[in-house]
Length: 267
Image 1: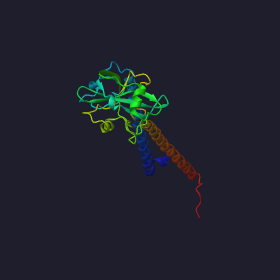
Image 2: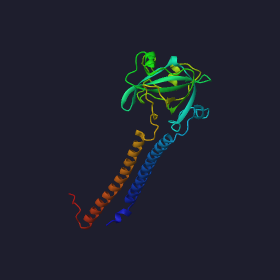
Image 3: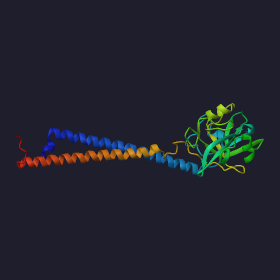
Image 4: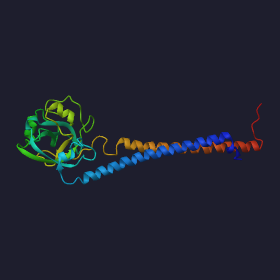
């Protein structure tokens, strides 16, 4: 009854079905591998943050070989020495912490070689005051003279991440913490990449925890898209198998009907 499977038409169809299933399984496995890679990256990042170790000078992490903050250095404990530029303190609005709306207090730290580190000295609840100098008085001014700040290295912000905006804010406010935005506001000899959230904060402020860069923690929407594509390819492969068996069964039933002389009579 199944001798029709050995005909050229069915041999070709079966070969095509096998090839389609193989492609679906390969693509599904590849997407699953991508998802597992992103999960692995996520776990490694969490472990790296949990074991950031002893604070290291910022130049040790942002040297000539690696001038930019990466997923491997985000959250690392660093130290930076210099003097705060208290005259150019900036407020960064629309920052959420523990479900509450507030703003960052950012004070540039000038190093001995003239470069600057963007130091977020803490987070305050509510909207930033219209007068930056009033805000500084409310939370306490930055200390004067040489200081060494210990904090967590953070990645550059981008539009849409954690309330960051491109512009349109009053003087004394900054919509997005990254090197380009800071250069537009304050022209120092150069800015270190990213920013530092201070561990020790003055009264009235809350220390800012590590902020994962947009899409940088491994478990992003793209990772779950990989998982969705995995399921889709496996379903496609299963559908090909289902349709092949269904066609075989229908053809076998037709062969049996013909053997019993039950073919429809055409007028």
